[in-house]
Length: 507
Image 1: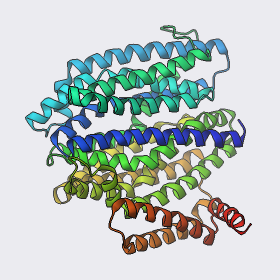
Image 2: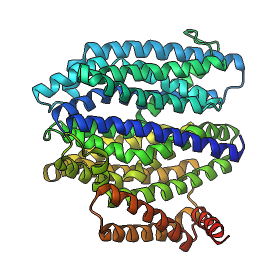
Image 3: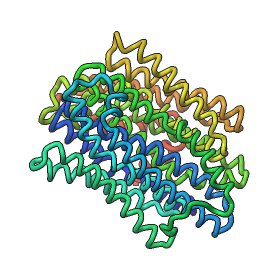
């Protein structure tokens, strides 16, 4: 794939991910409109937590390990057998796991979220029992997406995710007046099934694999390598999702509605982070695995440095804007129906704490991909476990009594930066991944400093009270500030674009 084609694909995937995330946010906005920060909102969010956790963590681990091994295989017959074996064990394992979730829904909810009131617990168990089967289709969809990505088929995977989120929202809006809270059960399950069917149709269309069951393959070492890689990835790649799970576990001991507020704030932070990360890693990771299999260390290192630089510029800029306009964003997106001004104040405060760590979370996901591509997944596992279960939990205990929900958010942010620093140090020492002068140059940090100062001053001085008006005018001025600051500090990626625009204006 040429560089121009690669950028075009990334652009299309990014656009579809933005649309998908929009419907994901719209789903949260619908929950906020119907239930605000109430016990029912908490129950809906908690019930869907485990299926989404399995989708992202287990599905992501299976897919990442599969791509890493598959890209190194040379014989077509072995590739076909490998696909069939993975398909078989994924289906069997997820059917069994889904049944366990349904049967033991009550004990699972009580163990994970012990601080819930009796009423909230009852509602959560009921919803979870219906939503749990969606785990099968979600995890299988993630793996089918990985197969399509290997063959440079990115459009349908992005469309299927969009269909999942959009279908969920549409069904809830249509069915809620008739079925009440059960509309969320149907939306969750139907959206996952539709996503899986769309991916299967695309695979059959291009004859990429056969959906045939196979329990073993002739060359068993590939399956062994897969499990050796998948299990560490399962733990290491689960870092962000473990953060969310732990947040909700501790928040169950706080006041009613805090779980919902944490969810709304964290989902908003994920928008710029996940859209950028998903678009880049979806397209880049198969290419990265290919470069690693060739032993092209220079190519791998170049991708490493450029990716981190792009993340710092993009996510760093987004962080500044979201922090300054946190209250306006929450009010514009959520403050309707049952979502009150008090809900906005609580959620905006949490959003500010979360957004400070947005770059660290995104960079951690990006850097760990290099460890996986080079088949060195051990340290991401160790760093993730220490960051989430030692540093994060310790800080939550330290901060939560005095800061409440804000202490939970602050602990997450600090832990993410600690893990990022550790990954960078080990990446250089063990993998030879170095950050050169272009990323450490003063111009990038001067650019971010200028951007922060000007955006804060504009935010304070805007003589507009309407939140949407402030966001529109503030957003326009923010983009202008980015271009001017980039031109002044001579950031190549920004100054070249600024100069092109200036020449067009002059003409």
